[in-house]
Image 1 (tube, rainbow, N blue to C red):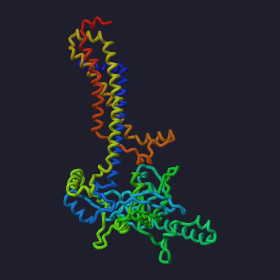
Image 2: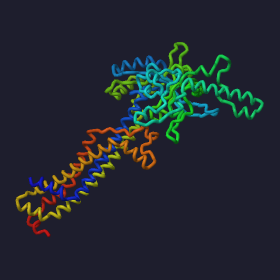
Image 3: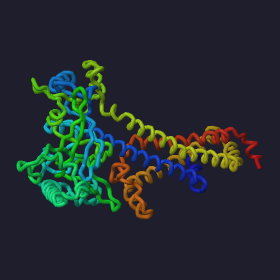
Image 4: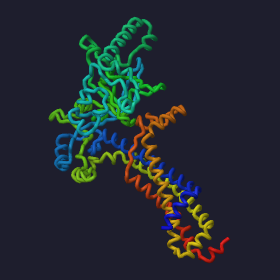
Length: 505
């Protein structure tokens, strides 16, 4: 009983112990906040990566593709059994895209992806990222009359309004307006036909490739539809709004190699029918989607005798809880490795995921050192208390207190400091985590710079996930450090001889 009474008295009167409590509190709170942010960031990033890629990716090692996707998919279903939820063939090919911006060509390197609109939604969340509500229900590579989102949907969910005024005219209104402007430019070229320099300056690179004659009206007809990422045709302006160099309704030209020997580069015109935004810049600024059959026909990937097309990859979606690694290994054993590469989405993004895990581990080590510093503070304070209370320890021992009893006083005292510090740190960390976005906004207004820039970190708000297990080991670790730091002073106090302690000056 006397141990608890003395511990409570020391906690109330030894204000220097508050230094150790504050150190433990700040260390625990910081670790809780950092781990919750890193867990939220990792979860959101993995969800978006898996939203574009299937759980498993079955790829042909040849860029020209492998024949008969239906036969391959049937064999995959036979091997994987009931684990498969969805499966869809695709064709990936590196390409160059040309966007006509007021008569000048803007060239971008992209990856052209041919997809099956009927099955691709079953293997990815691609449809959720489209900007037209009807396409989010069922993708259609036909140009819409209008109705595209005029605000960033993900920003609206966080209470921000990032307007995209140019999207108000997207679709057929945009196409008819651009056709009118092109017609005016052609009429101007005809009037200046006698001036060679003016004619050269006003020439349109697209004009020589457009079909001619009365059977083609660019104001009413379109080419094959494509879906572009917002990063391929848009940018964030200085005022925070989104600007676009191309919108649904515009035409683009894409050059890519045919699947033939010798290699032959071809160019096709396409009409933008929608935009997608996954908030993963490597996808939003790289992928261009179009119907699988059209890409196969353009590249010469359809057998003229059988009518069967080739594929370069098959996206596979598994049942929730299915072991993707186990299914991957079974497929690897069934298909020759020299022709096919089979990997999970984690395998595809291994370096990125490993970098995030390494960063989290390093941060935890560095932040845990804050609590370790608090432990050294407890060690020093307890040594000071032992020296100061030498005569009191002698009196306790002369009255019958055992060495273990004296040792228990300081161990319980250290445990008390750890519990108080960890408890205060837990409360502070959870409070900070719950208001972290408001705090970030306040700091941004004070400093004039955004603390969490969505263009850098992909997200419009700081994602957080509080893991009870993580919080538990942080608090247990802090309490353990406080107890361990009190062991050496406690042993020194326990070993004091009562006579020498009473004679101590």
